Amino acid sequence: MSRNHHSISFLRKPEKAAYFFLSPAAIILAVFVFIPLGAAVIISFQNLTIYLDPAHFVGLKNYLNILVDPRFWNALRNTLLFLVLEMPLHVILGLVVAVALSQTNLFTKFMRSVFFLPAVCSLTAISIVWSFLLDPNMGTIPYYFEKLGFPGLQFLHDSHMAMPVVAGITIWKNFGMTMIIFIGGLQSIPQSYYEASEIDGANRTDQFFHITVPLLVPTINFCVITNMIGSLQVFDQIYVLTSGGPLFSTETLVMYIYDTGFKSAPYDLSYASAIAVVLFLIIMIITLISNRFFTSRETVDM
Image (cartoon, rainbow, N blue to C red; front, side, top):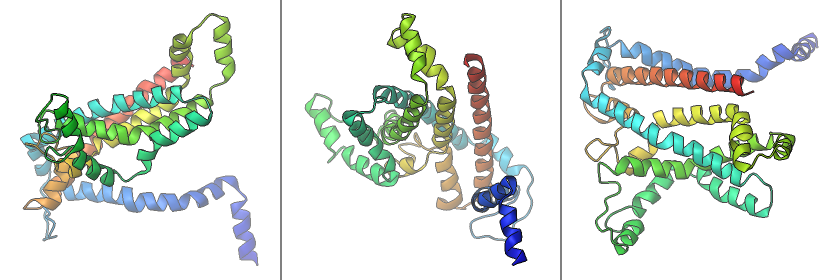
């Protein structure tokens, strides 16, 4: 009885109860994030293959190999290209559509559902469908482009078109989630701000840039950072649609990590881990810079 009483009294203390309820998430993070991250760092300093042969310490050898690896730099360039193509258009489109559908009525509810539907579907399944639609031999889209006078378009087989096409498919698939987040942010802005600005003669454009955008800076910051991290870790759609081709023009860092560690001999887990650690550092640096930028904007505008 005293033990039960002690447990109840423990949960009645807010700060201790918080740790109790956070513990499942903390355990999941530890098992699936922090422990693998630590293991990757340790493995990156060794010489280990997928066959788990006895490994030995090699110091910075794997990181020095990265510096002279042209395929790594190509993958990094492709990753940054995907980020530049996908993230800004994704966030801007989500914001514009959210503003257009911010009013609550039957039509806007229906359109929100339409735009949000791809976000809840499997990215792998959607990529497979798009691979059929864009197939130059039997795809519907190349067929209609040919009827319009643009024959022979190789959307996923052209080294110049493949990455923009993959980025476009990713935007179409995911911007609905960003739209919903922005709608939530828009609905939290007091209408009195807009009413006061109308009295001062502000039009819709003035309201958007001087009220909506400044008050949405925290939401924009969240959307930019989450989409940025997702773009830098892009894998599924690349793997299904192009497998990194043609001519490695869509091979990203995560694709290269997968190929190095699990697909191509000698299945070098150590080198793949070193690339993963470098990618983690790149994501961390870019995220910190972006967060600091938006935080400063939030301080100035608010």
